[in-house]
Image 1 (cartoon, rainbow, N blue to C red):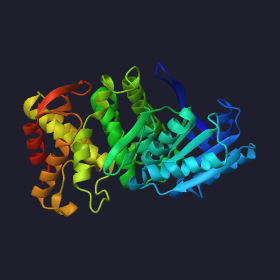
Image 2: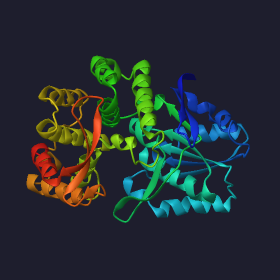
Image 3: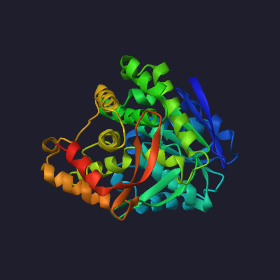
Image 4: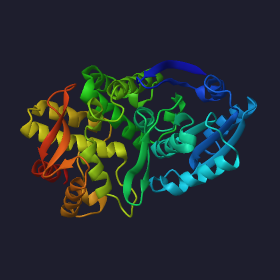
Length: 375
């Protein structure tokens, strides 16, 4: 076991540690003892990890004489719903799980969101531990307190803000990711660099070879710096009324692209891939109308391509006609909660580290960006 870094997350209303290391999962029982005397633990895991990582956590807690309960579920986006929540509630009621018991989420963003929602609502709030298993979850969804489930066709319709007692980020888990999932997670790191940190942006370019080789030193730097940026934006704005909004850079148009290119409700683009295309779409708007230089636009394009991330939608590759994809993207943006009449709130930047919220970007510019970015 090796701990590389501990980040103390101070958000004003709450605080908790984020521990980054290799092989740190084996020590989880000792971490739990630091915040509760209750010896009941409920583990909710992605079924992919049921016999590996979840078993390791289960065995570690059992050796420490915890009474452990395990629930496995499919981590597909379609399972982030009230039915899965009720299954967990049922197990917890049957086994008299108290609010000072501990709920452990092992998985990516879907598991983290769903289990976080359960923790926030069971007996008005219980102990929560995140063990994110994807790079995307490590740098994004496991931090910031957003927890939610979908309702029918509405994404994150039922949700809350709720923070864990502990976030364990084991770099060993990054080694097992597919290249595509690894690069998708790096899209969030690149986003953090663009909105806040030119040094990180340059670091990602200068250390490309070592980062893709998953060097511990370089992964820890990328993950920890992204977390620090996110914490800085969340602190004092947990409910997203001010600077936290900047973390949505590229997401509004990117999300529209993700759902508009789904095939039979299955994603074509990973979330990070949607973000990279979304960033290039808003960069197009910024270059044309908000003083982003062509040189900087090209540097955004270069860094995404360097990490095998898409910079435009290839309609033929997706399997849809170009006009259909454009129409769907525009239709989905019109449903966005950030729309006001014929304007949309967007995050734009004219230089790295200087992202701003614009409340009145005309929908006509959004349509133009989609026409540019969808080939």
